[in-house]
Amino acid sequence: MEKVRLLVVDDDPPIADLVATVARYEGWDAVTANSGEEALRLAGEFDPDIVVLDLMLPDLDGFGVLDRLRHNGTMVPVVFLTARDGIADRVAGLTRGGDDYLVKPFAVEELMARLRTVLRRSAGPAFQRSVLRVADLTMDEDTREVRRADRLLTLTPTEYEVLRFLMRKSPTVMTKAQILDHVWEYGFGGRSNVVELVVSRLRRKLDDTGEPLIQTVRGFGYVIRQAAE
Amino acid sequence: MEKVRLLVVDDDPPIADLVATVARYEGWDAVTANSGEEALRLAGEFDPDIVVLDLMLPDLDGFGVLDRLRHNGTMVPVVFLTARDGIADRVAGLTRGGDDYLVKPFAVEELMARLRTVLRRSAGPAFQRSVLRVADLTMDEDTREVRRADRLLTLTPTEYEVLRFLMRKSPTVMTKAQILDHVWEYGFGGRSNVVELVVSRLRRKLDDTGEPLIQTVRGFGYVIRQAAE
DNA sequence: AGTTGTCCGACAGCTTTTCGACAGCTCCCA
DNA sequence: TGGGAGCTGTCGAAAAGCTGTCGGACAACT
Image: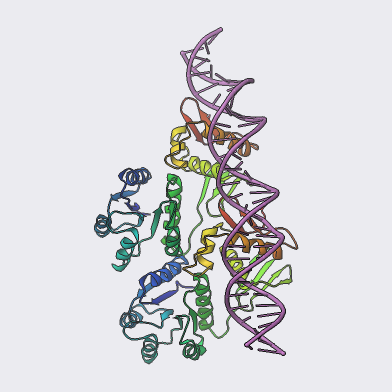
């Protein structure tokens, strides 16, 4: 696939920057806009494949931006960001077309996952499943089914996210800080051992059968990969 | 790649110089700033590819500098330096993207390694693995896998760092002092034979099979290279 | 043969990791 | 509205593994 072009619209520069940086890290092209006007201008110039759109903007609000976009005939898919309270209902109504939304504060991996899904859907009518695989472990990102050697595992949301992150990055070693930073909401204060704990719980479920897949790289972090040699 | 342009921002001149010197030694272009204002000015003039930014600055603090940088539309990647205590949490929020941070006191080689990683990532969408190779010894810096003639070695963090340093410098001879200075945190007190010890341990793991790769240059230091006649 | 430099075994202290127990929370259902 | 089930994160203790000090054996150079 071509390099994905992402437009991020959020009036809070750190947030916009955060999203753009993560996207670039994934190899996407990303630009940011801090107002509705700027967003519309950039949508024209930059011609994005997908848009992340905060609903709370100083000038024109998110809905307004969307209307104008659609008015111009742009069918680009949109993922909305909203505060926890409030307009969730109205957003829900807008998400039928394949668009999606996420509540702030979000975890960056979750945002990226939704962007990928939306892109995949909008790419073509025949949307192919996204299945991650490491050794005899598979994760179907559509059905959320995780199997180890065909045995179905039941994971909690957090476990699922951590596992997905590790599988996506496999066979690269990730530090605990990286895992925490990507899988937990930004702003999560936990100076704690949550990551270790979730890994421990994952291991119990995964490695129940078969050889250990999640490996500790002492003094550094964790990887998921087939034990070499 | 072109000559990398690095901007180092730290109010403690010895530290800033240390980093700049090491970077120049690697063939990079490096400039230093000792205050936030200077940093912003230089960022404009010098147009760096990457920035090392101490968070504790006399005038504008590190976060302020970052905000202003971003505000100017600069998407340059940043690696932060922080003291051990305190703001690690706040930093975490900024690092989710792909930027990174390091706690003082750090080891110079570790800083350089992170800079290289961040650069590599921001360079292109398809980020190519970084694999060091000396004779039949290979080190994959992403997976942290080290192999001698395909046999997987298990190294401790210190061993890994020393070996990486030697491999990077190969076939140049490094003195024990250089190794100590680069691989251990600056300010490390050990007037000792740690380096010898780690090398000894490395040898046992590496040279188990095959001919010795790490050679002693008596009265000077160590090199890793294929034994030449 | 003396001197200087290197190697490395043993050990103690320390750091990192693992994981059981538990309490607060949310969500769901009656 | 109350109760229950399941999820998440905190704490702490025990285990595992890593690092540096010491010191004696050994090797290399003069």
